[in-house]
Amino acid sequence: FGHERGSFTGAVRQHVGRFEQADGGTLFLDEIGEIAPSVQVRLMRVLEGGVVTRVGGEHTVKVDVRVVAATNRDLYKEVQSGGFRADLFYRIQGITLNVPALRDRRADIAPLLSQFLAQLSARHGVRAPTFTRQTKAMLLHYDWPGNVRELRNVVETLCLLKEGRHVRPVDLPDSVRSQMPSPRDARAIEYPGQLVLELDDGLEA
Image (cartoon, rainbow, N blue to C red; front, side, top):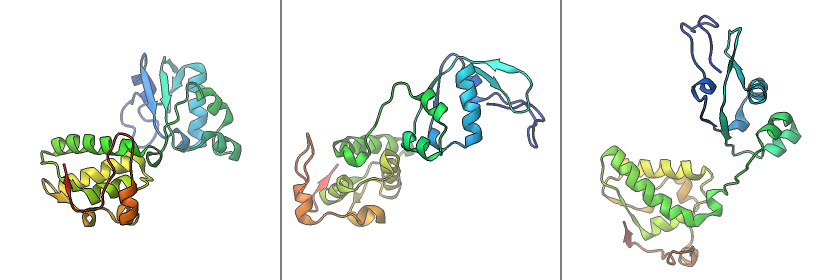
C-alpha cells in the first residue's frame, strides 16, 4: 500500500506501494491465504473502492489494477474456520484455475527437470549434470510436497554440486531418497509419452 515519509520509524522517504506501481496493469499476489486479517481488511477496501491510502497518509490514490492471486490453501475451508474473510474470498473468486499438485501430474516432472537443467546450468555458467536411470526413477517417484519450487531447488543444487558429472541416488536429498521405489516398483513406473523406467545404473542426459 506504500507509506508516507515519517509515518513510522525508518520511513525516511515516501514509498509508492505495489498497487500504485501496477496502476493500469496487473498485480500478482502470491500466497494470498497467508496474509494477516488486518491486511485482508485493507485489501478488501482497495478491491472494492479502487483507491489506496498509504500508511501515514491522509489522501487516497485512485488505482486501476487487475489482480491475480495464488494460494496453496483451500480458501473455502479457511473461510469456514474463520482464517480468511468471507467478503474478501467472494470478492477475489473470479476465474479460478486449480493446478494439481506435482505428485498428481507426474508426466510433467521429466519435462520440468529438463527445462530447469538447461536454465539453471546456463544461469550459473556450469555444465549440466547427467542422471542415472535409477536417479531419474527416484525423482519421478517422489511426491514433491514442495511442488515445482522444490523440484527447481533440487535441480539448482545438483547443477552447482555435480557440474558436468553423473548424479546418482546417493547425491539426492534425504527426503527424495526416503521414498526410493523398490526395483520391482521402479520397473513398473510408466507415464504418458515416456518409456517404462528401469532401475539400473544406465545414464540419461
